[in-house]
Amino acid sequence: MTELANEKLVSVDSHVHFTDEWVKARLPKALHTVWDDANRKAEDYAGKVLRGGQRNLELEDFVDPEASKDPGHFNPEGKLKAMDRDGVYAEVIFPELAGGKIINPQLMGDDWKDVFQGYNNAMADFAAHDPVRLMTAYQLPLYDIDFACKEVERLARERKARCVQLTPFPSDLGLPDFYHERYAPLWSLIEETGLTILNHLDLRASLWDVFRRDPTPQKGIFTALPWAPLAETICMWILTGTLEKYPKMKVLFVEPGLGWLPWFFEALLDPRMHQHYEFPGVKRPPSETFRQQCGATFMYEPRGLADCYRYFGPDCLYWSTDFPHPATCWPNSRQQVVSQFKEAGIPEADRIKITSGNALKTFGLG
Image (cartoon, rainbow, N blue to C red; front, side, top):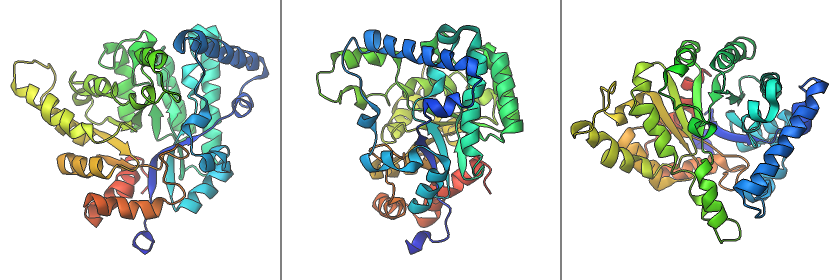
């Protein structure tokens, strides 16, 4: 598209399938069995407890048939070629199956820290093929804050990390919420290093009850609901005063859906500041904190995009391809960017901010 000929589009949500072989190649041989055993235990628990013996939703249920078979789904050389084909300059890359879900003390005992470092090394080796264009969302554990801080320092120093992914639901792991004082050293360090925190759409533990009750063939009710619990995550960051306490810290919510956000802030969060609710440590309207320290990604959602743009402005919105999931615009991203923003009625200057400028600034790409 001539309108985008010189623009560096940045997708703030793309996915790669880090295979077991890719990960184990970065682990000492003695830990290969630890990795395999943890995977088996996790799948056994998921099958018997979470899914209640019902069929698993396979990766194929969540990917675009063409994109998922492209080499860009599996290896860095292929990823760069897939990006070039799509006209995308840089991407924030999330693992298809987050290692942090199985790398924990319960499944791996005392070996979990070594495995966690190996998993992040696997992500770093992928990014090393082009450290500017490939920005892996490094996993960060919350079980041990001293270890998490050391991992932040290591990734920032050795791997030039730009962002880290945290679970949006620490309480599902039996841990305190983000406002708790145990996290203070970690938030201070993340603020100091300038890393961006990413809370990607995820499955709340309680949502598996819906899975077991969902009678539809592809669990269409279950898969339509993961956005909703992110409302809690947003509140825990903002209404506890945590983000105001760390004013240089930035949190992006990845794949939350946009349409509900203006209503949520306008109808529920901002008015409570003037009612009888008390929020110690909160000095400004929640929507202002969201504008200054948060952000949200989206794929194709022209109406929600238009509503969020009118309510929040352009500076906290981030475009993404969501490669290779069903909603992906790959390999036609540039055409869809033009059509979606035209449909949303967003001026060109602000469109450029949302599709490239915000991400270039947030991740220090120029």
